[in-house]
Length: 327
Ligand code: ATP
Image (cartoon, rainbow, N blue to C red; front, side, top):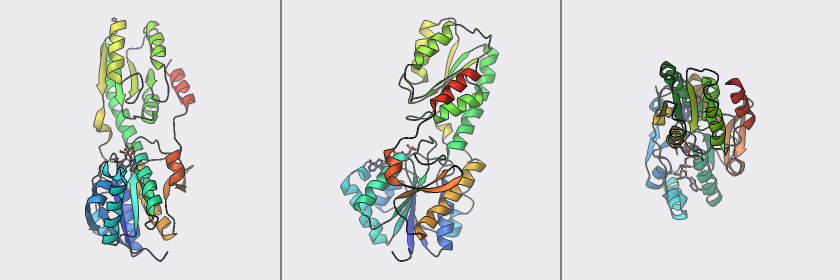
């Protein structure tokens, strides 16, 4: 393939702090290599509806420290249909876009893989962008570090009030299919128990723990629950506990969308910039249908096929460690 002259960049799925640093990285690296850059707004929805706007080097000034995504993001049902993807292809062709960089999660990269199988003439490069950290083939995803730090800060604050009142707090964090945020924030805040979607029957263990009472004379108990836990969210688990253990003063806190927002951490800014830069390098190298990831501190190119067929999940040994460390 001859040298690419015009590329598109978009963010898709849930927003994640650090996405702007990746957009900036892609834009500046591409312009340096004499490519024209088109920002595709609202993810695949914008690709289908022609929401295109050229990005110059100055268009991405002063965005590296901002949360969210200047390109906006969306979830598009239409892109999940053949007709929708054909519309998207026709728009890219009409606009003269010869390659696309997609910044998003598992679903966004699955969409990219399917599109590339149908329309191999337009290479796509993926960048892992999700606060969930659940993408196979990369140790790192954009936004996870910032989200984790937001959770830790919030849980520390809740611990202060929990211990003043001797309360049992159930704190719900994000992670519908993966328990990385729950596990790592739980360890980092010394939580007494952690519920993750990967494990079943954790409610029985919690019951056991509560039956023994506040045996260790702790002034507070913090239980972290991932939103996708099969036993229900924090609210449901707390309701059951309240009924069975009237002696506990139970409270629930659902952290919700604060986990997505805020200034990206230094790590998210640095890694997202790097992934943006290497996405353009991959295009210059004639690569296609690969995600740029970070594995063992090295930049890696992982085929979409692998990324979207395999599942990344927490190490259950870490949960055992968390249990032991909270005795
Ligand atoms: P997050 O991890 O933050 O949820 P995500 O990228 O996994 O991000 P999804 O909502 O799963 O978020 O996917 C984003 C978009 O990618 C979908 O709205 C859809 O347009 C596209 N997409 C997802 N799965 C497919 C699929 N199987 N076929 C085509 N497109 C898809």
